[in-house]
Image (tube, rainbow over all chains, first blue to last red; front, side, top):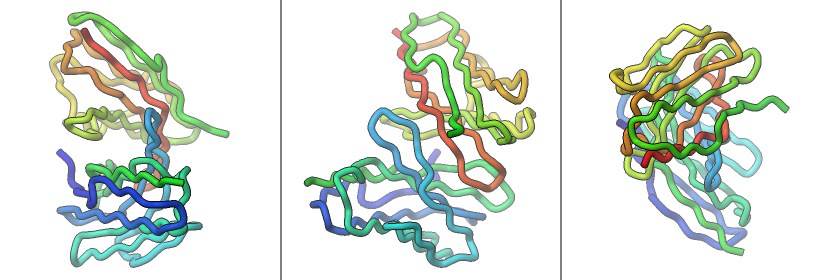
Length: 111
Length: 112
């Protein structure tokens, strides 16, 4: 069963716009990670944020984590058509090493 | 450029046949994961290993699935006998504990 629920399930925007995806989870975590999956391909790690961190940046990506609300958001700024993919959050529970993935958000960026 | 490799990339088989999927993790990674992805269930963890020892295989149907790591460079996932409901994309990933995971390209399995 999946721990994370992502919102929205699908998002369609124009190039240059920002895209925001949200993830909620259920149990205590050690860290939360975001992955991207292009159609027919494996997942690619984007960013990892630890439970004692609140915000992290990587290039055009900004991730926030609110452990009190058990939620995280991924912001992609100045989106490009190449950002079209599915985005998944994944949590590593405290004391465990395995990841539990969310349901994913399908992002479509139109030129 | 270190990558996780998986073979075969595609497999079509008939119900009842044995299926073996192979994965070569990235050298130096001591944790290996097997996932299954379907439209209905999403991405599910089947089993994972650390230093070649199985840590958790609770996500795997024990009666027909088995996962092993004969050595540090090879992980296998076997289904015997296969059933149509096993049709899915199977991903292998490797990494370090509590860190990012690196995914292979997947094996797309179709059981007729």
